[in-house]
Length: 301
Image 1 (cartoon, rainbow, N blue to C red):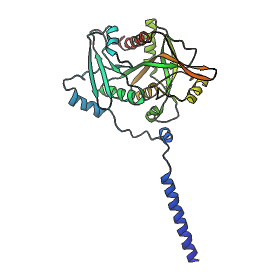
Image 2 (tube, helix red, strand yellow):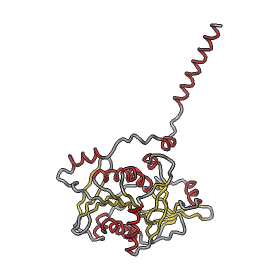
Image 3 (cartoon, rainbow, N blue to C red):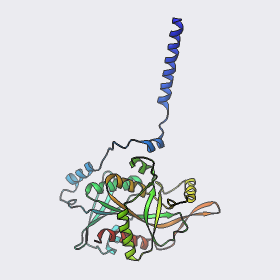
Image 4 (tube, helix red, strand yellow):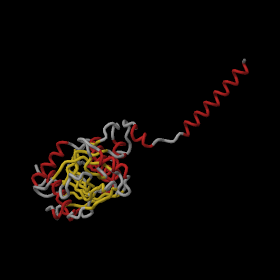
């Protein structure tokens, strides 16, 4: 009996070791980690980066009295836009590039509320790094201005879309406290302010829900087909790359956020075949008009 019990103990021990080895060999489930991470502990905050910049890079007070309003504009010709908006000679260009290559313009014009324009970087990594640093510098309200691919045939070209929210991408889920809410929302009051500025300008505008796709090229057709099939109040009408993580980060950091996009192309289902149709209108003029709406929203009392 004793030998039998000893043998049983050995067998159970071996089985336990095998089970432990198999558990250790189980692959990490990346998507599960995105959905079920603990949100209490947050590392790598922007305060240290901004403190370093003030001490080592901008040592003559360039970052003092930083404007509370900022616009993230996804264009390369920022100064041309500022000049056409009436701010020629009224801005200072600053740049740095450690955690990200950032170019920003601090605009100060007598009689006008100061604001900052940042050349936007694409995707979650770009927008969230830039906006987190803007908040650490002193910004409290941020408007994102960019382009989008239209999904709904009911949304015509040639107008701006003031976002009501966007379906989150993976970056946004990492920033979110939980995975239950799929749509990230902007600040309602600040968004209403942007809509009021658009109405005053006379520029045609619409409201819409976006879908944040973290890639531009080689987007999965299966996901796009699913988006076209969604019904109801949260039906997405456009696809873009930043809104989901931008809105989620703003909520996390206590920022007021809003977003304006313009349709540069459209997803077309042609007899079951999906393809991208590019707008042949004046996209530069429409983006400039969207930028002027953002400027009016942050400078009008």
